[in-house]
Amino acid sequence: MEEKKEVYFNLLGSFSYIPQDIFGSFEGEGVAVSKKAGKKTLSVLQYLIVNYARHISSEELIDIFWAEHKSCDPANALRNMLYKIRSLLKELFPKHDYILQTLPGCYAWDAEICIKLDTEEFEHACLKARERSGKDSMEFLRQAVFLYKGDFLSGNDDEWARALRQYYKTLYLDACKALLPLLEEEEQWMELINLCGQAYQIDFSIEEFTACQMRAYIALGQPEQAVERYEAFKGRMLTEFGIPPTEQIEQIRALVSGLSMGNGGDEQEIFKMVCEGSGSKQAFFCSFGVFRSIVALERRHLARSGSRSTLVIVSLGRSRVPTTDVRRLERILQDGLRIGDPVARLTAGSYILMLTGTDTQGAQSVINRIDCTFHKVYRHSNARLSFRTSILSPDKEEVKM
Image (cartoon, rainbow, N blue to C red; front, side, top):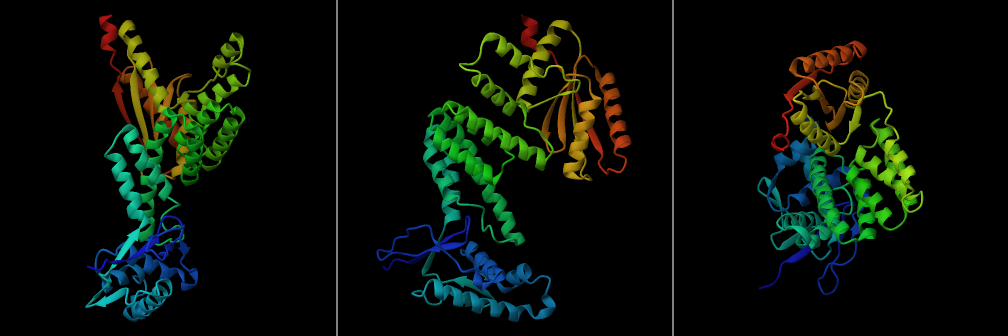
């Protein structure tokens, strides 16, 4: 039985195809598909490629690509578009005739053609990695990271492409996060630095990549490089979101400062570094991990003292200006809470805080003050603050002791 003919498309990064060599193998980075065909022609072709496994009706294509121009004879426009696409495919694959076929009311790829996509290989590697744990997943994670050459169809701004772009981006970032601790365990510092650099280009706001990259530079004895990564990350976070790095990044930065003193510095310098910044007159903003540690210590304290403390989650409503109102809420929390009250960010516009020594009634007074202050200072904001409280229970193990 004659084997099916194969065509291979790259959709991650630039849109390209990989020609077969004389032995029928696919090699090389791929040949970019000419942009002279036009953005819409390429988008329709890409949509047909992504959905190669099924028949696609004329109505579906018209609804996606001519929804706003149905009065301009979209059926004829579609026929003309398919003529262009077939001409383009003939240029790409001169040995394959009638690669895209017209069936009653729909279009389909030639059943004798086997279409291969880098997105499918990428997704398969990600799923295989999830089925394994620890070092058994490393091979598939590395394969997934290697296959991700860039965002899905990066030049296509159509809505159908944007949704898939986010899906593949999430898979890629999850694969990077899963690979980081494995590389750290094996001390593969250069591979880790390169991985973090690539992931940073996809989503710089995920501090995990900057933190791991800084630790890798420290491990390689290059604290200056770690400081550069810190400064670049801090500057971009402040520019884009108006938010400084979290406690995790600051702790690594402090470690770099200690190392730069020479063999960790003497005891007095270490004491000085630990106590720096303790004179703040605002609430204590920290990472969620640090917040949990503070809460654990407070629960021990409550077991001994018998006093009360309250946890509060404050969130912005949906009718808000994302970046602007987030900054406003942070300012109110910084200035409106007591000195040292710990606050951690949960999501964009959502925070958890601990009111030490405060019962439900006292917490409600703080909530009323925060809500009143926010709407008094930012009276033109449409944001609506919501609050949820929970009394902090003492650590039972501490009580037994």
